[in-house]
Image (tube, rainbow, N blue to C red; front, side, top):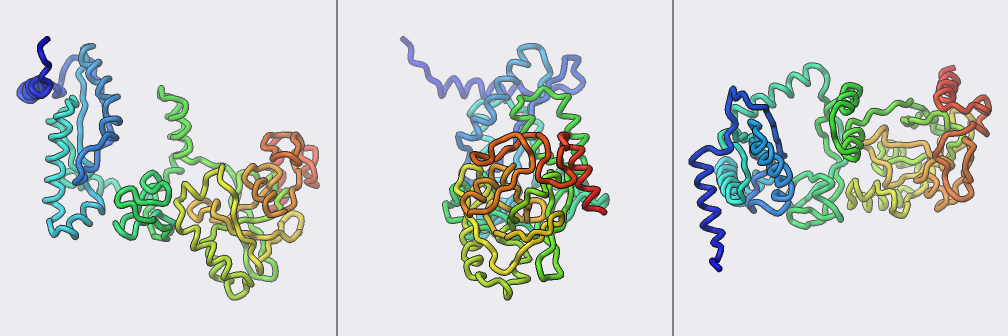
Amino acid sequence: MQEYNFLAVEKKWQDYWDAHNSFRAVNGSPKPKFYALVEFPYPSGHGMHVGHIKAYSGLEVVSRKRRLQGYNVLFPIGFDAYGLPTENTAVKTGVHPRVVTDQNIKKFTGQLKRVGFSFDWSRVVDTTEEGYYKWTQWIFLKMFEHGLVFRDKTLVNYCPSCKVVLSNEDSQGGKCDICHSEIVQKTKEVWYLRITQYADKLLQGLETVDYLPNVKLQQENWIGKSTGAFVNFKIKEQDEQLRIYTTRPDTLYGVTFMVMAPEHPLIEKYRSQIANIAELDAYKAECAKKTEFERTQLVKDKTGVKIDGLTAINPLTGKEIPIYISDYVMMGYGTGAIMAVPAHDTRDYEFAKKFGIDIIEVIKGGDISKEAYTGDGEMVNSDELNGITNKKDAIAKVLTVLEA
């Protein structure tokens, strides 16, 4: 049996594809069009890894199939080349970022071609080229002019060694995916886009595409449309309001405690009046070692510290409510504080059980001695809301009471 010389065969066809522009999309072709787009790689000095192969192989198969079916396939590639890692490499090696980037792109290009991906190499995007980034700057400025861009402080995953901000995916287990150093939570001022202003249009658009259900759900969560109300809870003996955002104002009568993010500014503002401020500071320091993903996992054990010196007042009942700090509340979400209704929220229920906090049923339908009831039902223990069975009616009623 003749031995298969894969190196020779692969090189033969790769040279042929290059010489004949086999994968170039033809302008003005009468064939039906098909556009395939993968997420452009960041050209690091380490070169490609198996994650690139995994991510691109699916559309590679589809693109080749479409060509065989007679489509004019546009399958471009590019390099998302801007980033602090390049800057850090330049500082460390003394080589200019332009040189580093060009070297890395050359390496990636060779590797992508050797794998055999059918990209249209006449259409390569390099995000560091002026002809490209001038348009991203133009788009950003237009959004800024229309009030769609703003700056605000938030907690980020920060690697002190690489001096970069990391995504949750790149800092799992509390370690930097690049250098494996311990990451810390750091408050930084960052740019935000007001995506929620387009929420309705984006959600309507999702109904017109043939996506997998789990992909649609991810998109819906990213779009982040939320219908609710802001509610102010007075801080006892202070000229201060603890402002929260809730999608369930109808459950206000069931609020038995409040939870603030460990980084909430009210803690710093009233630190001289908080008896256990040292305990709060220590807890905050521990939280700084966790990623956002680790802090918000539903399955983890609930932790927190009661604030000894600050108490909230329920705006409907007038009852005093204890305030805690806990890692599952983030400053980047809502107002950095929540009202807790343990009878009807699983996470609040677990927290209340652990810390011995009252649990008051306000929606009939479950057995709160065993678990939180998160479904709909008749309002109970809620004064003027009692007997209402429609959630929208209950919300409308309680908002009227709050505004009175």
